[in-house]
Image (cartoon, rainbow, N blue to C red; front, side, top):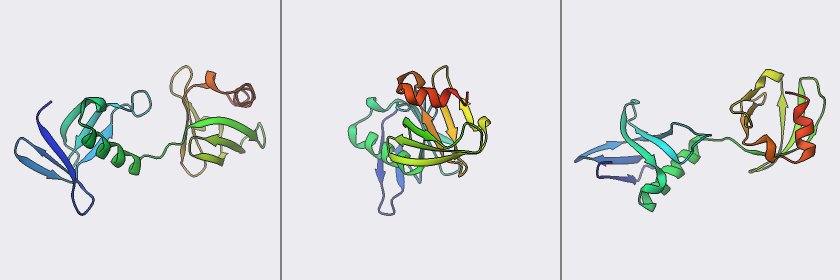
Length: 153
């Protein structure tokens, strides 16, 4: 990886300085946001051209990795379901009451095809508002949550 610096300017935009040239408004993008969120991150110019590839966030100085993580957090919103408390019906549309890493919430599952399998044990559930909820590992859910979920798979 080339020598570079990354700062946030007074306007709140990320500025990448790479090989003596500065690029304002760079955007970090995860290549694998679910499978490897802290690996394979690209810094893109405002017009979408890749300026820098970062293999692992941990390899960066702490101040730079913090800037990247902060910027990603502002743009990404994907609550992770930790428990399914209740479902209104086993037919769709169905209202789910769930506990997520961001607190308790309710989501409306319009159709069963809005549950997408990512891996053998991870799912992405998209509610009626287009918000995606991640179930990282179905095997780590409690028995009650798994029973409710099984009715939809």
